[in-house]
Structure formats: C-alpha cells, structure tokens
Length: 170
Image (cartoon, rainbow, N blue to C red; front, side, top):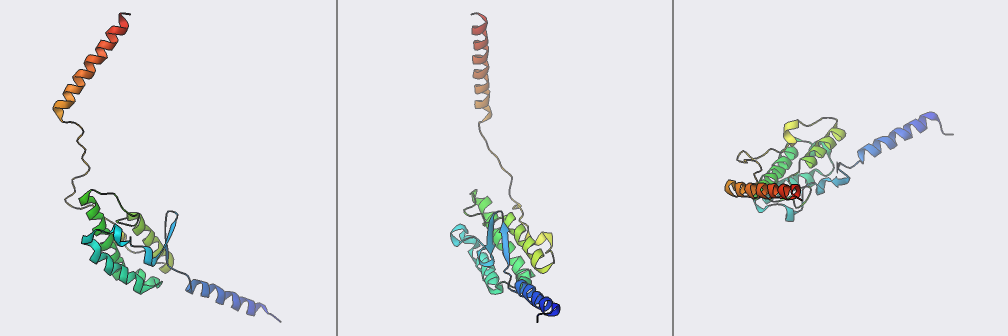
C-alpha cells in the first residue's frame, strides 16, 4: 500500500514546507524577536533618530519573513543606521538604554547570526556593528578636587596616627 518512495516523498515535502514556513527570528539572550520587534518602541527612540528608525522599521516590515530581503544591503544598512543613531544619542545625552533593543550591539549580532542561519551567508562584520562617536572622550568621573583630596588625606592620616598612639598608650 504505502511504499518507501511514497514515505520518502512525503517526508521531503514536509521538511521543505517546514523550511519554507519558517519565520525569521532573532534570539537575544532569552528573548526571541520577530522582525517587526527588532527595533525598539518609539518611546525608547530619541526624536533625532525617529526618521532613520521609521525607514528601517518599514523596510523590515515590508520584507516580512523573506530572509534574502531581511539580509540584503538595504535592510542591513538602514537597521545599522537606526541603531547607531540611537547609540550615539544615548552617549551624547548620557542616558541608560530605555529598552534593550535601543542602540544595542547584541541585537545586531543576533540579527547577523539569524541571517547566517537563514541564508547561509554571513553579512560582513562591519555592516552590523555600532561604533563610538568620534567626539566621545570616554568615561570621566571627578570625585574630589585635588585640594579637597589633600585635606581628606591629612585628616585621615591625623586620625589614623592618633588612633595608633591611643591604642599604644593603653
């Protein structure tokens, strides 16, 4: 009744249908994101970046789950521009990320991995990487001015020596 050829043909069709119906999902940590959820919500996007991110969001939604479109240069470039803009603004304003997807290198890395898994081609490393702004001078925390630090050191030394003398004379 059922032959091995029929079973093999059926199994092949099921496997190929499963591959064709597979959604393009990006896994960041324990969160699994669909293509429409890659870009942070508008409340987490600085107003300066809203135009870039709207363009990127429209491209991602327009691609649906077509991996060749999602991993094409247009989608990759616009997504990177959006994330880079958010990242630069967060640094400029010295604010923490309002959402884990806002200006996030891990999200771009996960997107790159998803492209590799879906299309078996790895996008170039420089297309999905955020860079620090050229005018960023690094983290700087000024705790005490030098004069105040010297006064604190003198008082600390005075109290330390006084404590030692007090304990030695008991």
